[in-house]
Image 1 (cartoon, rainbow, N blue to C red):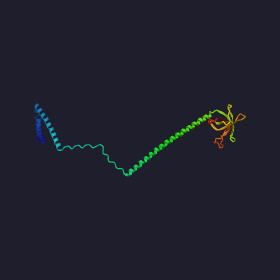
Image 2 (cartoon, one colour):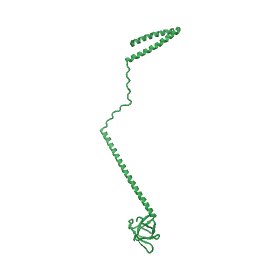
Image 3 (cartoon, rainbow, N blue to C red):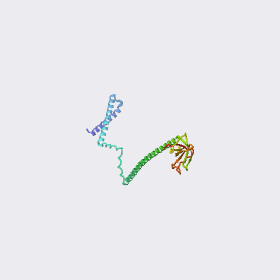
Image 4 (cartoon, one colour):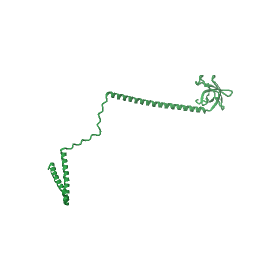
Length: 230
């Protein structure tokens, strides 16, 4: 039995059952309990047949008009467009900028090396200056604390002569080189000539080239000390 025949039979049965239900409703007040039960079963059967009819109809419609397949969803990531080729002029500009950047980086490296060299030289100069200052301080300390050997009583730059009185009965041989101190510095050197009858020593100034006439400006009251560099 095909689908059409089934539908026709079902429709006929529905009409008969519907008529029977209508008649049952008309005589419901005089129906017995068994009649009511039979009517309920007929109604259930009618509902079942109605559902089957609907299922057959839906199957028939699907057979006539099959459901089109659902197209697959598009990808969430859109395809990237092809990159636009760079023109020759733009390529030349990019190359020129890259060359400038490389030149600047090279110059920066050279400046870094130069600055490093200058810093090293400055450190060396600073260390050397510091050493000289330390040496000068030590020399001034030694001069300041050197034992006093005598005191200048008179001096003459014109004659390059110095007369000094020895302290603590110091004896100096002719030719002995002594230094003349003022405060913490050495202003010149003298060479002992002889011991005078008065007990003072006569000495000759040694030229040092720091004054126009070449002799130190020794004054009375300057201190005679040993030559620390002899």
